[in-house]
Length: 335
Ligand code: KG4
Ligand code: ZN
Image (cartoon, rainbow, N blue to C red):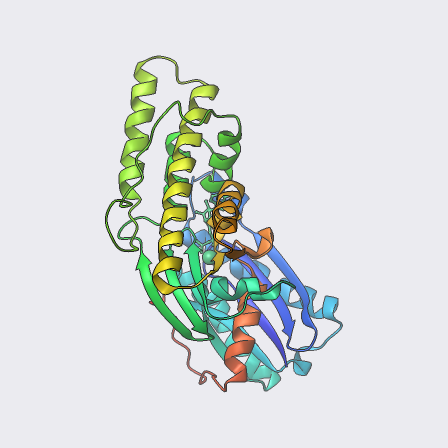
């Protein structure tokens, strides 16, 4: 089964073809980062317009790379939510229409299921059951995964997502957009321990998260450092390092707790923040002590991409799921 996947939920236009026998045949990605950078965040209207501009050229590109015609596909999968309404509409309309034109089924994919299954695209893929830590710009969730479509949310953020906290901290520090990679880069030059940030909610039982307190703490720390007159590059790096350390520590503590609670030893990490190298190293270190294993997608499949949608769509099509001709997007869609 060969499935075309389309991702247009936010600021990345991603297209890929997944083959159930041969794996990923082709993929292409266009990132709108430069377009939104000058606004310091994603501008929904501009995002939609850019998806319209880029989507079909990218579809042609992956079909050419795979040496195929659209009619030779077995289905088209598109991200149907959660995400920006206008942006989702582009992928849903284009995907449904192409499937109609080619006479193949169309299937709607939940963006976070795409992230969750992205590690399955790697040679060293995890076996079910496992605990997934989904950490993106919009979500922070711990999920017990017993199979495709068999997900139980164990805990999630009560306010900001981890990626959102990274983005906001970057803004406060005057670093660019998107914030996660910028904070991580600044933190490399920072001294951990000069500033001590709290580890939110770790002393309470349960698996929920809260990152809005860290945001306020960062704001106050930046203000105090400005007032002290020494808010230079080193100071910013030290704050970035302390912030990152607090987020990483909190995520590692909750992951370990989830594994113990569910009596499992396999952890899967996905979503933009899972590209963070300090988080990866710390989790690997922690799990190595208890004989556990951690799996991630390759860095380019941690953030939004078409490959994860093609893969999740192929899983859904294999069990007979498909959409009618009228598609409704789902900007807010709990998993
Ligand atoms: O999964 P994703 O591409 O889009 C959403 O579905 O939200 O995640 C984007 C988020 C952004 O908040 C970005 O700042 C964060 O992932 N991110 C990182 C890193 N790379 C991306 N956060 C921390 N460290 C990174 N290296
Ligand atoms: Zn995402």
